[in-house]
Image (cartoon, rainbow, N blue to C red; front, top):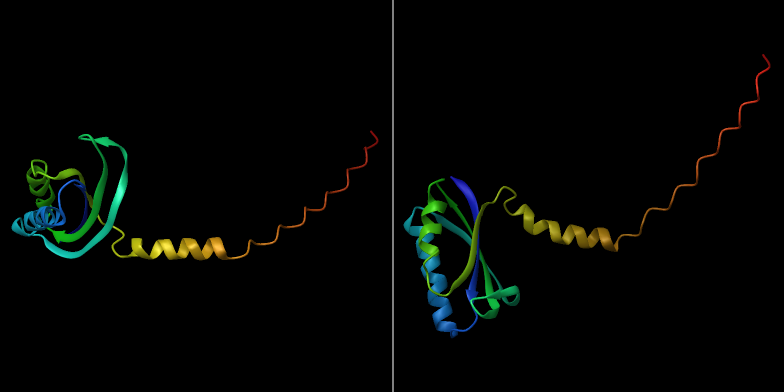
Length: 132
């Protein structure tokens, strides 16, 4: 089975119950086509980069799942017509959980003191002109 990650942006207009029902419908699509959900992450309400369907905010969810290679195409064809879904994207999750570990390492690198600059290399003495 291949690991995938589904990013979904849901409309911010409906109530929490409607949004939760839409998320459950998306998760059902994954499981109906043979996928096994391993993790669901909610990043919350965020401002969209540009207006989509006259909306400027949306709720972001990331669903990690394992499935056969035919599953993502089936899920995409159904999620495309699901009400309340503004945007979606399914990608292969080649990094797995290592992607989650990258952020703390980047913060540690930023907090670490910079290496001292090396002293400039001594310049080689110029060669004396040769007598010919």
